[in-house]
Image (cartoon, rainbow, N blue to C red; front, side, top):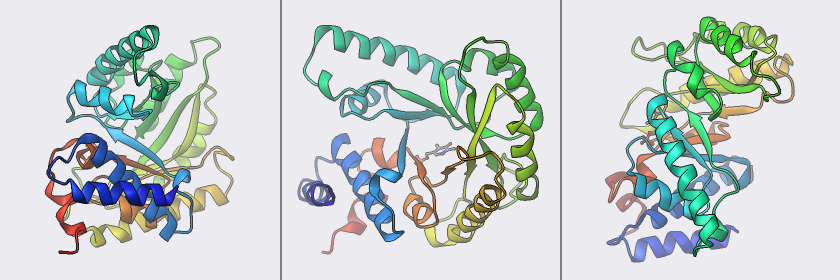
Length: 276
Ligand SMILES: *Cc1c(COP(=O)(O)O)cnc(C)c1O
């Protein structure tokens, strides 16, 4: 498994001029695997979510054809539109039995990673597999009120977004309020708290974000140790293009990566890897 990924990385270096989506994707997967290994875990214990907000629809289709299932958008409108387009594409592909149909994932799963406005909750609820950005009791109550009325549906799974660094520009609850919010959500029958999400401050140096991720991981562990949310409270979503390796080293088991997969010849994910 790892040897294969290593090969993929080597290929990427040899043909770095091409730098195709497939190569970038393989490279990210290899780095995820290496970071997982460094933290004593297996590669498949980390979920890679591809953030499509800057990607073209063609790129999104290409990635799904490679077998990738987990995608994320930060705006409900875009998420809904892309989910519909992709459904159509997958269906057509299957019907025609086109090449590549075999690698198509069983099901595409959409993650909502941006701030969720309460007035947009209603139409998105059935499409979103995991909400990463639950950041208030009011929003939880709104979700419960809507989802609670839909008979036979599975609970809406969500992560509580925590503003670890306390920056004013960031959404999320204060660390000290997180546990209580998880407890409250746990009592809502149509919702299921699955874990925490955080974003690190924007910085050039990925090492600067380590304390932020570590703090979120400690908070996550505290809540789990207290038994709040039960067994299913087991997702720690942190890490983006600039810092996903550090995030994994700090305990993340879900990373949200956009640019490193979709952006062509991004400076941050080529040259620094070659030894020349
Ligand atoms: C845009 C975004 C990402 C992905 O960012 P990249 O730096 O392109 O990997 C991850 N998480 C959230 C919440 C985002 O808004």
